[in-house]
Image 1 (cartoon, rainbow, N blue to C red):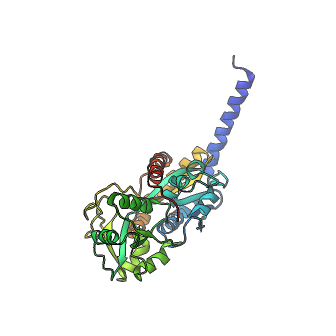
Image 2: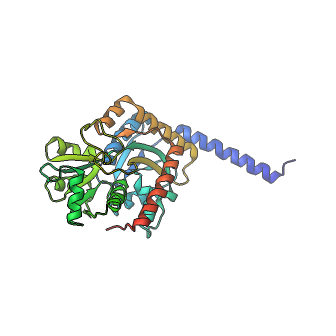
Image 3: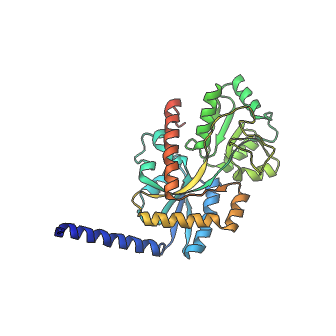
Length: 325
């Protein structure tokens, strides 16, 4: 005989499961917001708008992209972490904003990796080193040699600010090679790349999409790729390793996160719909034009990557004593 209390709990649990499954089947029945914690024009913003457009068609509901930059991206990240856990407010963000921020900003009133759950890893974002077209730095070796001659005087900007993989990977690169660059802060790629092109900043490490118009216009030049293999977009540009600086520089990605407590069925529905959107041939073509690669992912794969990146970048931040400037 099953005690009445246990029977009641079991019935309640089954009822809740049935309600959650029904909710996931009808989701979404109103607009969904994607909050991007960066200004318009960054890679994440470009991709978020393309994915949202495709999802609007699939869902027959508006998928709205809202930019909320500021405080090293934490304004937008926190807005989602504190939102209702119903799948209607999502974060479209570089992975580093979630995986590394707790270690980088110990005073945060919330913990991104604990207060958010990954939905889909979205896209990989190849990172390029670009200089002004008239820069005396023709190669990565030139940049390193200049930094050795004048520590801290060779300046750079990194996509994602100081809270994402380009900055962390370059910090590791500097430590490995006994050099020091000077970081310059900007709110977004548009202003930063304009100043790199104008010679006010020596170089940038950034996803290619926001830099492409300036490259095509002859104002920026790509000298190296912070990846494990060359890109078809610029097959003549060497990787860091091919330029003589071997190392594991990680991977940049921009994905989707939901508030902790979002029902698993809703997470799976979101992951499946985002995956289907990224597999759409028309969207794939637009992503290729933006020089990013869709990732085969879902909540489980994304969670494994968040865990791995959290461990890697947190350890690096502690080991090198990285602090926000």
